[in-house]
Image 1: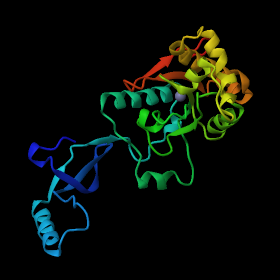
Image 2 (image 1 turned 45 degrees about the vertical axis):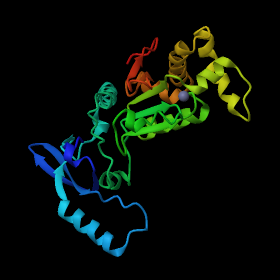
Image 3 (image 1 turned 90 degrees about the horizontal axis):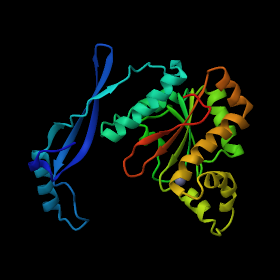
Length: 274
Ligand SMILES: [Zn+2]
């Protein structure tokens, strides 16, 4: 939130969430208690100065609503009832909120965690890159229990990742699988350069090389080609996923996350209807 200028030096001490029911919508209003100048330098404060600081802070304490109204879905909403197409729309709408700076950070509190602790029904599954700049729940503005995520450098459909995604869809019921690449992906860049790397890192190369060939060495293009390739691998190499796609229970999608803008650009997959 933006604090008034005079309060810029204040620091948040504690936040309370107050649920309000407005019609059929549950709204959370957050109140934050701010203390002025409560940042204590270290342990060198005398008892007297500490007392003075505390008294000042107490006098200056105030409630400032942080103007963050969260138009949350009703508490009992069941995303597993969404169709595959609706699930994909829900996923992409979350990214639009993130890009617009209108994040809701939904279903991220301890209450939601307790709710999903006994069982989970994620509405989407993601095959993403292990890159630290692509945290999937943040990119798509989702919370606990929403996304079944498997991440690996280069977002490649290795045998183990296919098995995980089969579990996320066949057993848990996710209706969409998105392969999420990203700009400036180190795994794709390294594969394109074909430089020697230590240990087992090069094991990833064999899964990315066809995309490099298809893009004729153009790394930017290869990132998109790699997403297409991995979607095709998932669609064709897994009888479990292929059957769900054929029955209309699952939709495959591809996206490239732009590290500079935060936008997930959809990737058209030949022969795959989104
Ligand atoms: Zn990457």
